[in-house]
Amino acid sequence: MAEEKKGFFKRLKEGLSKTRNSIVDSFSSVFGASHIDDDFYEELEETFIMADMGYETTEKVIENLKERVKEARIKEPAACKELIINIIRDQMMVDESAYDFEKKKSVILVIGVNGVGKTTTIGKLAAQYKKSGKKVLIAAADTFRAAAIDQLKTWADRAGVEMISHNEGADPAAVVYDAVSAAKARNTDILLIDTAGRLHNKKNLMDELAKMRRIISRDYPDANVESLIVLDGTTGQNALEQARQFSNVTEIDGIVITKLDGTAKGGIAIAIQAELNVPVKFIGIGEKIDDLQRFDPSAYVEALFSGFDEDRSELDILMDEADPVSYTHLTLPTILRV
Image (cartoon, rainbow, N blue to C red; front, side, top):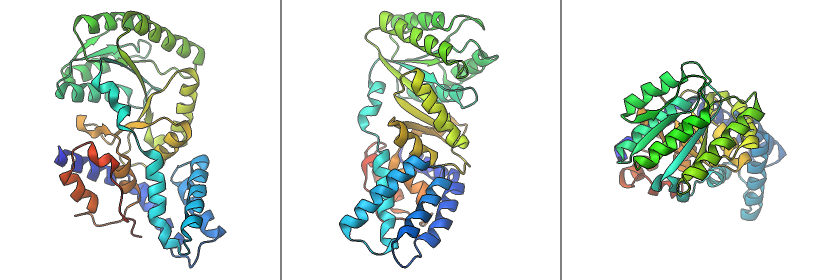
């Protein structure tokens, strides 16, 4: 498992290289300044906004940095490196309780617009949960998009789990009703439900999701309901706007950010979590089943900002020795070398 995590971290670093290179190049001049002044903070602000961290999130980071600089009486710009890393990492921390739904009988509603990777996310989660020994069932409740059911069936077969579906154009709520009945009858641990991404018609989307939740609450009251929104990391601020709009029509418990391999907009994960106050729970960096993993803020910030030795970083050493969960709470050393 440690080797798997190390491999994922390496691929994450590679995937975020465009964002990291942009940040590191800018930091070269920012931290080369002789003293901390308004120009220093303005250059930092510009760097973060260019990385798609967003204006609001950037302002929070800068204000927090100013407070810590004042408290510690820091005079040298270079001394702010670790502070910045810690500030960003701390505001992205995900409490272990965020994954409690995986330990219970749970129904996971997967929402998001078309094309962001909902189907592949469901397939990967299904495969991983089954591999961990759980009984998993998939429901194809996106009955509006052409080929959605067939694509999901391909992933269900690949994951080795069963899928409940109706014909294209059927009532999504009817699919959920049958899926819930099947989940109870089969003593399923995790029921993953694919939903339509019709954000252009908010009223219908809101009514549809509300109807699904009513069915689950009525017919499966003992189940925990988790709502995960899937966002495409390559779309930057558009992903944040999608998350805002979905949060206006339904409850969101967690975020899945896909397609982080090769994007220059890697800072968007920081912006989404900070502005919506919803935790990023999973990130994806490729098409393989294991290319979707739990979100680890320390590793993410490391991959986003570091310029340290590729062969043997301190995080690599810690990851050798740590279990898959425990290193989520490690304190990063001073690793930003510019």
